[in-house]
Length: 151
Image (cartoon, rainbow, N blue to C red):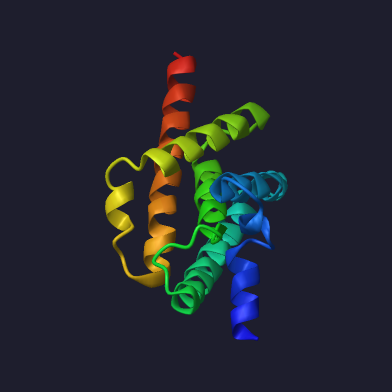
């Protein structure tokens, strides 16, 4: 039962089990969630981010232990949390959300410092932390783009 719930959460209701590029599917599944949270304000977005991150650490840990793999590809709740973090930092609007999606995927795949290094953390923390760092990178890039655009 615990394992079933953890798999449901970790795969973000099955998005991580879609064929090819599960991380992209997980991020895409996070877009409507981020948009809905933004409609209700920053506090809701922050609260959902904290909830998803906490559930993500727990569920990723369970799945890592069950599957005996360090970072199973079907675990995509980390992409959901990372994208939500990007959108917490980024300016509001659909264009920024599209840019956030693209930049988050870029940094999640490219893994610049310290994204790659954070994968070494144990269990659920290692699964989640690198995507959170990718989310920070993407969000900061969007802020920089917005700042340069307003000069």
